[in-house]
Image (cartoon, rainbow, N blue to C red; front, side):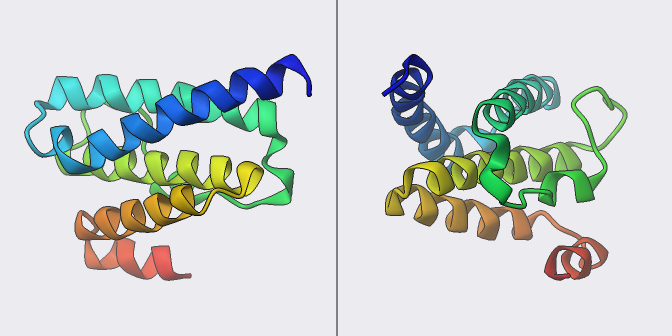
Amino acid sequence: MCDKHVQMGLRRKNIKVFIVFLARERAKTMQKDELIQLHTFLYQIRSQLGQICEHNGCDHSCYEKLEITPYQIHKSKREHKLAVFTLSKDIAGILSDNNGDPGLEKIANRLDQMAIRFMTEKEKTTHRS
């Protein structure tokens, strides 16, 4: 097993705990600036995971469909919450695809449900397609 895979295993557990914490508690009461910082952090994690795992042919493009980045601070708090949940879902999905962990798959599904709560009707139709 290479060093990257060992490091990835340690990171997976930390990320899994972080995602569960995020989904349950903190995202409900965050201020917009805190949400943007979290959005930036998750964006960087997803970029790094994408380079390490090379997605193995999996499509995790839900975030790109949103057309919102952490640098667009003029976007609403709702849009940044949606981006945070979508990024978290993508991260859990990438880790689940590379690890086969059913727990991460369940978390990804739950985060997807939570993201749908923050979507407008137009975004929901885009999400389904």
